[in-house]
Amino acid sequence: MDAPAQIEGTPLSDLFWTASVELGEVRQVVERLEALVSASALRSEDPGLIEQAQETDAVLQRLRGLGDFFLVLAHTAPPEMRLRLDEALDRMTLHALRARLGGPLDAPLPDSDAQSGDFELL
Image (tube, rainbow, N blue to C red):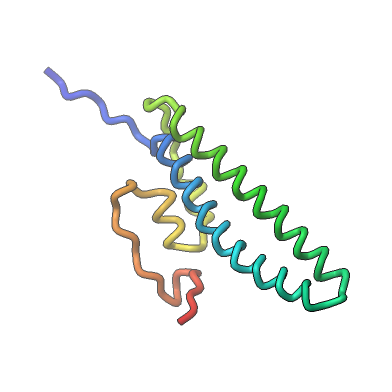
């Protein structure tokens, strides 16, 4: 008896889940930036800063909505649906993000280095 054929590609649910997590992490960074912009806007009479604080809040709402959207898709995507990510991953310049989007959920993440395109502060 032949072994069942391996289905190629990344499960769509895994991709949606990873996208939701990534959006959540970006949202956390933007939340910290919003706190800085809001604090500056409160101390300033510059209407531009107040507008920027409002725009930052709108971006946070969009990030939260997109994260929730992808989370629901992750839970509802049929498990047999898979997607080949090769071409899309070839366009990624941040190696750690590329690994998270293209690898199995339990795969170790590579360390960031100067050649990876990733930017890290001390």
